[in-house]
Length: 81
Image (cartoon, rainbow, N blue to C red; front, side, top):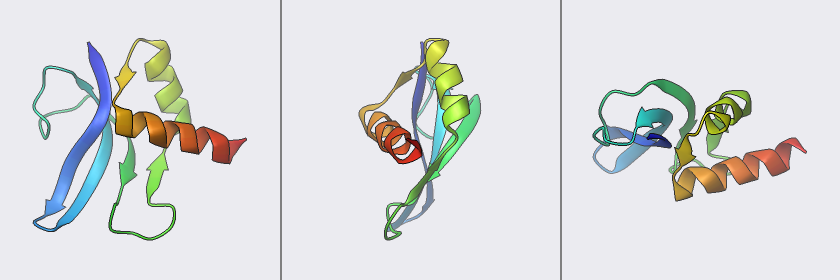
């Protein structure tokens, strides 16, 4: 199964995440198929970017977003509308 989830980057106490499409059996920080956005929890205000066109394409093809990514997708759709 293909999943859309967070891939941790950054250093200790300074997390930064890539939102990636990945095989669900892969390691958390392993290889990914495609990057569709970023998330910086240390930033104020809107702290994520998301390419909704790519996300919609992957979801249509059966990718399952994690809970965190699903909430970001929901917020991005609301902001776009």
